[in-house]
Image 1 (tube, rainbow, N blue to C red):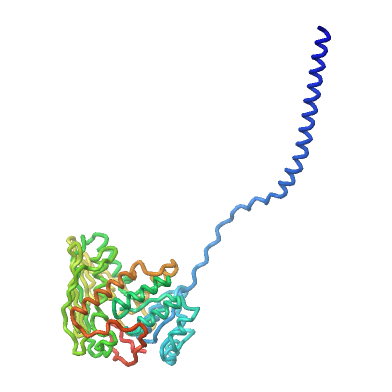
Image 2: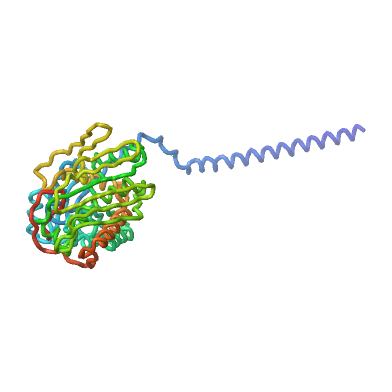
Length: 420
């Protein structure tokens, strides 16, 4: 039995030796692995530094305007731009069909580049957006030129002579992904925005009735008597009332009315001279609008609902006052460096500010004056003119050249640029 116990003790001693050898091997393996870990630690990139304070973002540079035409409305547009901060707006170039006129315009306003063709302006890489102030028949060809060259466009109203032409401009802008807006400057006046906020905020109840009129004695302005030059009261003045009706009675989307009725008197040349429009909207909204190029009218507009009314007492196209709740609210314009050609032209600054905001946001159309509304207004104008039976050149070809001629100077709220 003693021998058996001795054998068991020997076995235990051998097992202990084996375990000791295994422990030694494991220690050796750990030693071998530790240098590898150290080498891997050396290869790891250092931890990123702690973030410091965020650097301030650089301010965007000025919007560089190109001016298409050296006429009276372009003159006023540049005067309006000069009332804005120069670090936000600058006039980079001007173009006219007559290089001498372009150079004279440039010298007068300190514009660095003058061109004798619109093509040169379209190719100028230092221009962000072009203000198109040519006569009505030239809106389509000039607009297409700039849009196809990738230049953003602010088009003086009316966008074009017919719904078909407006659709062509809007379609080109959408296809090219280029900004285009019709210059209904009314929508950006503080007085207009105040009226719109009252209407949409329920202060008047649901707006039901809009009354407006705009008229001047313009029978001495040749282009307004000429069907080929897009003459007539509707194209020159009617859009102001129609855009107001869509905004105030057409809902947030500016839906067009299902019905429009036009009555009027034609000038001997065949264009509309004085026109009355009646528009019926869903929800029982009704608009009654009068436009004339033969008679002076107060030029105001009133909007009413079950809870009250508000009125733009004069200049419904460029308002600076609002009557509401027994109060007269005034929205004065800044002074211009020299007298403008048209009343309240300093207010062109508001649409220029809006265009800059749209471009900085990368928009291709204005949320406040979208292309769909321009198309709707053009269709309504077409319907009204057709009902009047006027002799209008409503479908001028897209390659039409700029017309030549001279117009008389009348200080009113409408464009009287000499055609280039």
